Image (tube, rainbow, N blue to C red; front, side):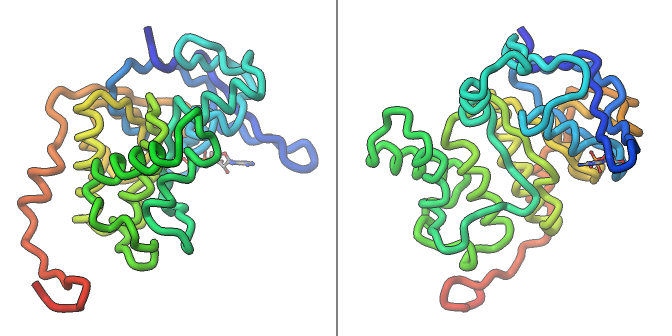
Length: 255
Ligand code: ADP
């Protein structure tokens, strides 16, 4: 069964004076468990609109969206919240971390809102486990301002993982990052995907789209190409080819 299926999906925004923008013009696609898809295309092609619909943040004007075989339009408010909190994980371009809270507390937050029977100790353990998965267990007490952009994005990824979603939706996750850091994020995504996580990533950068197994290109609200590749680029290998960086440790000493 498909994890996610779209059938002839349309989205029309109505602006003032009856003006309409047809942002999605009949998208049909099906995604299986364990896929890593990049949604690409120029600005204005409908990528964010599609992501908003996939993330159940916006409703389509026409067409059907089936998540785990269930029509999202038929879900009650509570069921929709449940889907959003437990099936889907979100990663954004701008990290969206709370600045006055530590990395660990940021990651705990989704579970604080919706404990699902977990004790505080279990929540902390889950958050630490997520932090370990992104290689930042030694930064648990750091606040976002004490972390680099790439580290902040890794915390945001850990936060998206803590509810153990089935699908991770990432909207331009490397948009604010330099090349090396972008590769680090892709390395994490590829590791998650190798362990079975289904990933959908919007990016306008072909350099980043290469790391997905399937690439969908959009234009004017339609998909123009949809290709799968067995030999995606390997982010870890590419990162290892870059020249070694000189880094400062916490005391500002070059290492
Ligand atoms: P992309 O993410 O590929 O840049 P978008 O999904 O943001 O594309 O936009 C697709 C089209 O829909 C564009 O023409 C954009 O101007 C329009 N659009 C997006 N969001 C809205 C909105 N909230 N209201 C009206 N038009 C919108």
